[in-house]
Image 1 (tube, rainbow over the protein chains, first blue to last red):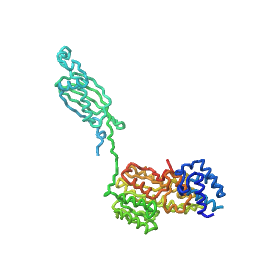
Image 2: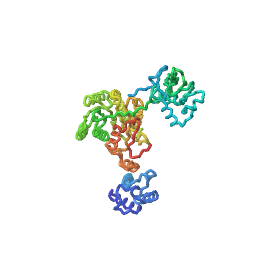
Image 3: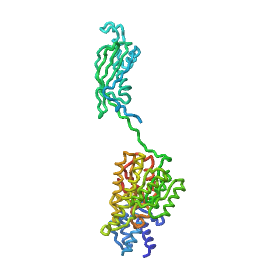
Image 4: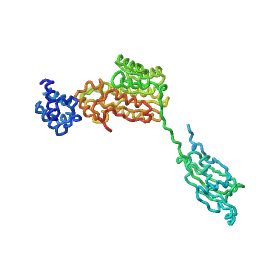
Length: 82
Length: 398
């Protein structure tokens, strides 16, 4: 999977889970800027990402998914290590 | 400077004042205290008593003991807190009294004097005698501010100033009016650019290539600062070896030693070389650039860096204690993760995580750290010493 496709998918997942139009999301989007991004939605996000990319996040990785930028970075590292 | 009056007083010292008691004095005393006992104010009544003439209030006469204590011995700053009195004979209106005190005991630890107090009337007859206890208050010391006006500012030597945090500090201090010695080891061109940047802002600066872990090179750098700018106001120990991420099991002593040499030995040599000049001037400022890695769970695989930064903080506090009385302030500035070459090898993920874990949601930039250093070099920080100022966006709170 190319990096661009992966990023697009992450933005789409974010948009769906957080109920925010994709054009309103940026790399800097985070719980600070996305109103619905609370601990419950965070778990939904983790599940959606795991299903989409067929990966499993460790406990420490889950708490590191603090912005779209970080999600892209961590998913990239996990896909690269597969 | 105001002398300490208490120090000058010795046992046996004496003082006296004279006063003629008038009818107006008595009237004023009656008005003040409400004591209109006819024995004091009504001649007809007094005639009917054994005194035959009005008697001046005893406390009016005794009040002149307050006058002599407050104005003569001990004088200004006296707190008269205890007095015994024996009224021996009456004083009449028109009588000239002599109020006399003599020091009979002095307690330096409590700053207390015990005084014989005697009031005599006409014919040298003793009318009042007693003993006073007086505390002599310590003159309040004025806030001592070692103000460095522009024309008195000596140079500040900033180590590792050819790039990153050191360069930003050099430029900021240059803008604040300090002549700056831009110390560097390898990057001649960078250092010259920093010097030029300071001069472009009407500041004074010169570059100085010197290995801070070499005592002789450091001494020569201080000599150069003195000859070029006439005086040294302070130093900023900023130079650091590059951070390498190495597991402790793979870490060589040489790598560890390199950090000790640049940061601890460097701060040691430069502080030792410059302190005699600062002590001579009775003022000086030392700022050591530490790191928040010393405060919290330290980053893994950075053992040498973590250790020397913690050591630098204790080094600063130790000097602050030893040199505070000589007018020298020593502080640390501890940056959080800062966007410089030093973190070029840190994975992007770690930088992003730090950013998101930082309450202010960004990494530091060198100018953030430079601002804190410039504050410590300003008169506004005149009473700050032995502190570690964290410039980390709140990622560490202590």
